[in-house]
Length: 229
Image 1 (tube, rainbow, N blue to C red):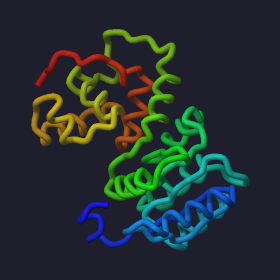
Image 2 (tube, rainbow, N blue to C red; image 1 turned 135 degrees about the vertical axis):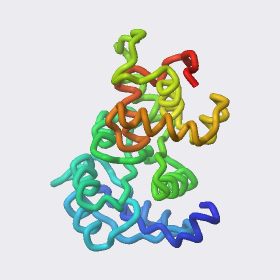
Image 3 (cartoon, rainbow, N blue to C red; image 1 turned 90 degrees about the vertical axis):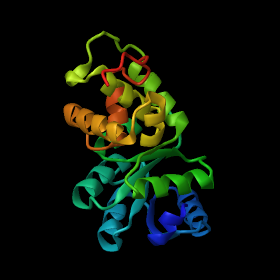
Image 4 (spheres, rainbow, N blue to C red; image 1 turned 120 degrees about the vertical axis):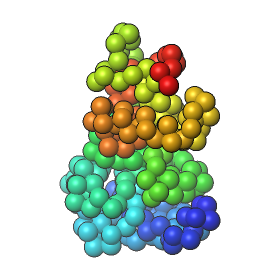
């Protein structure tokens, strides 16, 4: 974690996974990471929801397939009832179709369960700051799944301009605002303006939903168009 993250205090995390060995392993791993405090562990979505209401964690590491209440519904409930808590989805397989539903429910990041400790720490820090964090393998499989038979016409959806589509494509690649600015030779302030406009047109709230939107409309692999400024 960065010095800025550490200065903000430890990130309080709840782990939700129905497999005891995975749940306890994650708790043990998180306990070894600087700047992270485990606020509790849940074996299903209902228990996770109760823990979030009681402990008010910054982040939940959420398994998707759990009894009583699955990770998608638990994510939806947490984001609706406790907007100060972000959700990072944990999935066993990169191609798990439920990841797409979890993003629509409000998850801000997703990792496979074989992610390294550094990847988990980075994801937790990123979503706490309000950014999104995507495992490249999961992102690639999602792109393949939703763009396999997607037509690529010249007309952009929802009135997006070519420049806004370029910015959206780079967001889908996991680029930061600064990286987008460098790639397009514009200022970060201009990037933020484009993002605000495309979010409003697409009806998305954050970068995770923007990635889902880009994949759904076949824009993630779209080649750069001509700049409109």
